[in-house]
Image 1 (cartoon, rainbow over the protein chains, first blue to last red):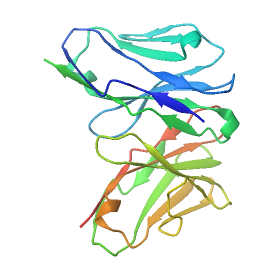
Image 2: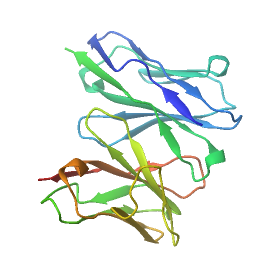
Image 3: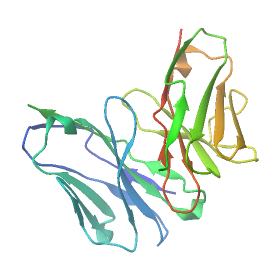
Length: 116
Length: 115
């Protein structure tokens, strides 16, 4: 069965500090996709990144960066120089095509609070 | 592109009544739509998967007679909460995919409050 673990529930940081969100996943399959979503207080999910299991390159997009390590089944997310607008809940998710129809398994989420 | 809308964005209803939530893919054909429920400070929990023209597949523990899902066209799926009770109060989110890539496009969610 799929499983996504985000251990830290709430993380508070002072503005301009970096914050790293850990995501550990479990799957028996070699082909899968990993995602990160941001959910601001409005509730709408904002897609941040999708990574397939064959692409282990790290990625940087502005202040966001992701570190994918297949050896440890982790897909961690770092926000550099955090800003108040980064305050939100961040979800890591796993899609395993074996289940068909692109079903997603979500982690419990990380509540990030950026203190001005 | 890949926009999914939900209507209404919020609804308040009395206990015992039914409420329908619509999910529409605006610029693509959604062969599959998903319905999630999210309680405060919790994660998204998949309720059901619906394929156009087929009966929905419900996750374990989700009452199919209470949460009626219809996916009659490639751009519209509806979730009807029948005989709603206060414990059904939640944030309901739909997503859609055209199965061409492994990604779901999420709607903005519907906040249901049952009084």
